[in-house]
Length: 289
Ligand SMILES: [Zn+2]
Image (cartoon, rainbow, N blue to C red):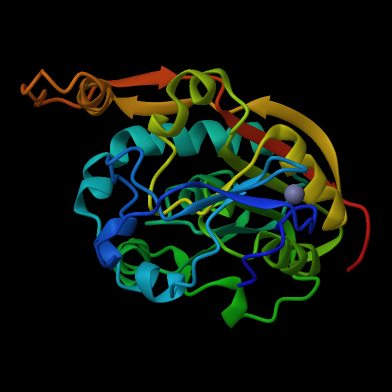
């Protein structure tokens, strides 16, 4: 991966703005529920478009294939509520009988929700552990990434929820999504928003600064890369997350290190959270690439 050019604007005005973690990294560093906020790979900033990214060469595919995250499964009740809301939102933009693909589908919660809405619903997931959980539940999930598939004109709708910030070739991923979609196909993207209030206040302590995140998109960055990949934006919103109350409280007290106490509620109580730091876009394919 070239350290000298920006993944969004291709500019070469790049500056290292944050040191990376020093120890050798392993698949567990990539757990979805990793809460060591502010621990990242070395971050570079494009001085032209302000995009922040981690160009250090690591075998991300291998990391995700071997990731096992039990605490992700433990929060699946809240994540199901989340998936239901996302599917319902997308439903407005999807034609009847559509064929849908959720990329980076985890254990398949969104795949299942699309199936419940009577779509022909598929998922792709690199982690063997998570893909197997979905397959055990009779969902149509393939273990792997878009690089393993040669989809062309295959799907009416694709969703990419909290995935694009994990890849070192976001434009390449979006171009493959463009090709996998039908002529009039559409597409959902959700990703943390770098030019948000909490990022401004917390700096590199912001909760989305994590080892697994290698691209940090402002709204402008995201709109630009979508346009470059042949998409037109239909709607821009902020995503609402549903998380267990004890998960939220335990993450909040990470910012108050003098508190040693940890919450552990028996029953999962879920709360909607919208901190306006997660971009949610519906886009339409307007150009064949
Ligand atoms: Zn740039």
